Amino acid sequence: MIIDSERWIWDSWYVQEGDRHHAFFLAAPRSLGDPELRHENAVVGHAVSRDLRDWQHLPDALSPGRPGRFDDRAIWTGSIVRHGDVWRMFYTGIGVDAGPARQRIGQAVSDDLVHWKRVSSDPLVVADPRWYSTFDRDGVEAFRDPWVFRHTDGLWHMLITATDRYGHGCVGHATSDNLLTWTVEAPLTSRSGFDQLEVLQIARVGGSNVLFFSCQAHDVHVDTVEPRTGVYSARADTPLGPYYLERAEPIGLDGIYAGRVIDTESGPVMLGFRNETATRPFEGVIGEPAALHLTSRRTVVATQPATASIAG
Image (cartoon, rainbow, N blue to C red; front, side, top):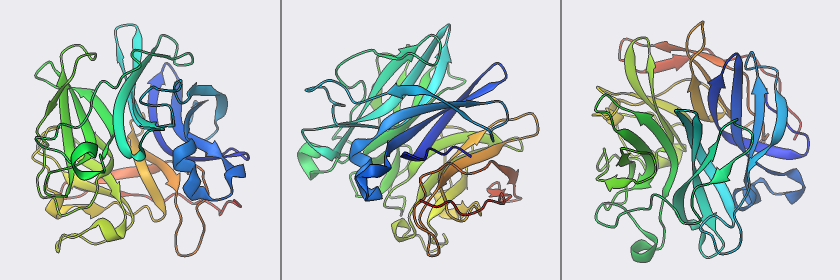
């Protein structure tokens, strides 16, 4: 479990170097009092573990930028890839000018996963109004949670939590051949029937491609999908789709949100934060790893880890 007595911890992303897993996560002071205030006060924390259970905290990886930068208010969820000897973190930036209403994507680099440097004071990827809801047109620009991977076409692809022009949550998309210059593409889904598809990740489980995302129960408007707050999985024919969101299913981790899939020697597991439920408050900790299993429908179910309640 990743826990900090002085800070709330929530969305996270992971990489492995040697025998150590590195966790990067959003963190904000518990002294704020109201957990809802954490979103505009978030930094990227960092911890390491050899077993995904016992964690050692390291210095924070990334804090808001200097005044006037696109990310001068808070840093939100991202992902990390390694290219050559360089680790590249793609992250969501929130600015003082518009706050959470406008979300843009930047990049920081590191050669040791501890010391990070931004590549630009400007965002690298922003919503294109041809396909996405934008701040200038609609007043809200959902364009966050970048998940970056290299595909068999040789290009780098970025999946993005976004809103399409019809007002539906969508799998936003951008491509690059060098990880620095990105082309925003049309979304990979349309009219999904979900208000949002948060913390997207494409992963392989049991030899199949699976799309993972999180949402609230009230975000689901698809008759064939059970409305639950938590992590969902959906069959994906390829990492770039099509994604069968009309057959998406909760993975069965009650109270866990923004889960991330991590490959281990014993199979894939998921780590996510312990969210508010009907029987407990928001706790601000990352729970224990849960094993993942592919179903006959090419969705995923999780083995719920046994965890005690944490006093907040």
